[in-house]
Image (cartoon, rainbow, N blue to C red):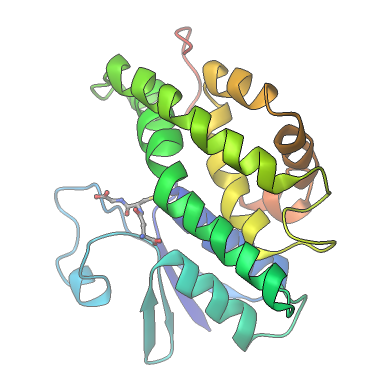
Length: 217
Ligand SMILES: N[C@@H](CCC(=O)N[C@@H](CS)C(=O)NCC(=O)O)C(=O)O
């Protein structure tokens, strides 16, 4: 049985869970809060950068979400989530890189975290981070909208790791009303998003966020 180390609200842990569900692979969830001051120091042996997720397949321990999801796809049966053709595979890897390199910080760490999550937990939040995240998200959404090119999936005719890497991040971004409006301005990406969030695996793995307060971004 696989062990997946993750934090309930972690968007990257959600991505790993989503891939496991789409592949139909069973796993044991091990809750680790990387933001907690009292996080088990032994976890650093699993993930020296103190992040989640990490995956243990017996003695084989892996961290970095893109490595984990590719491993799951390649090791286990179920639908193939990476195309074989070089151009399509390169496009998938490009999209994963764009998401990790340019989307995660503004969409999740700035807009979602400071605009939605922190206020809901009554943690200190910085509206300037939200504003800067929204400003930076425009270039990211523009690029992803061009890459989405109007199809049902981001890469070719089939679901791929690109869809499963992006959907959780956009979902968190859209928890902020301003994020939702920003996505609405990107027709191809919005159509793709509305379709992919209907998938049972997406709904089954979606973290239950704390209730919204009256204040909305
Ligand atoms: N490059 C890592 C990023 C993982 C990551 O940043 N996870 C967040 C939770 S979504 C985390 O552990 N954050 C803890 C922190 O920033 O201290 C991956 O691809 O897995």
